[in-house]
Picture (tube, rainbow, N blue to C red):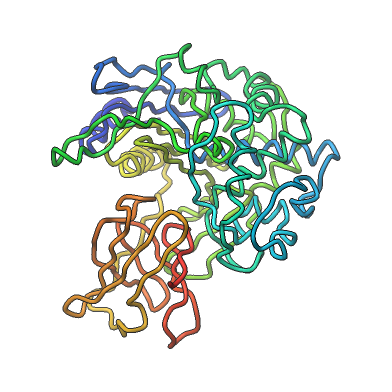
Length: 442
């Protein structure tokens, strides 16, 4: 690389209020750069190092998907199996719809189940099973297979499928199927394993002191969502050992094959896509797929309690980059670092389009309340400007209150989050998809 990565990371961390971060770059078959900055915990002031373990959040979903593909390669399931075939005890108030949901739809966030569900669960081996038992009253946001909505519960259901077929805990399967074969010695998903490592804790805005961060009392989202990303953590370099598998057609840096080349290609094949010319996007199983200029990239972000993660892989340039951080504006930190790394490879990162100034809308088609199990947003008109307020504020990056900027009649943006407008043209919008999550009109 033709950049000073340490300088880039330290500058970005300072600019975006990040307490601690770890960044690593894989080029070819070698991790060519590792940088850490800041502290793992502002209360203890322990320094972040390249062997610090950070939560990877929803990047975990690609691990869960990889294990489902392993089971498919072993002939133990098919992607178009209905989920209740493998989980006959999985229940929902709308069993007619649940019986239609396939494993493929879970992998691609097309099940329709309202999936942002984070109740307290046991911390042991029954955590996923307990979560699914508690989810019986969750509604469907749409008919299975007819829309896309980012779904945590769906990946917990996939985690439970792995448990049932492997006849062991999700944590054990994750270790036996991925961590151990790839020699990921600084990777964990069981909470008790944190004691063995230098571990980063998340930081959130302090409600008592504006502009300051605090270490929250709760360090994890619902433990039952571990297969979706609530507990797995690792170093940036260990995450690159996994990323190499998907860059190298199923083979790790140590020469171990853990996936067939067919499964790797399938996971990177578009399953869902936006046809919006201003903000195109595609989703695989479950990789986020994009084109930065003429170059294809894929990856996945993650977020937990005060921690943020990002993994981007570019097979064409034979590179993968990981950014892990523990507070502040983590996604903006990652965006700045990623842009600098890929710019040094002569790849320009896609930048969200700017709203059209004075775009004319009919506010009455948009105003109202929308929501799902985790968040409610209110759209109101103020002096001709559409305003969005989220409760609770901050969920999935949704602001307490901010102006909505329109890119075109079916696409808007707020805080760099895309907003898709759903429903018939010329009629009050039936749903919004904010940052990938469907919120239905109430």
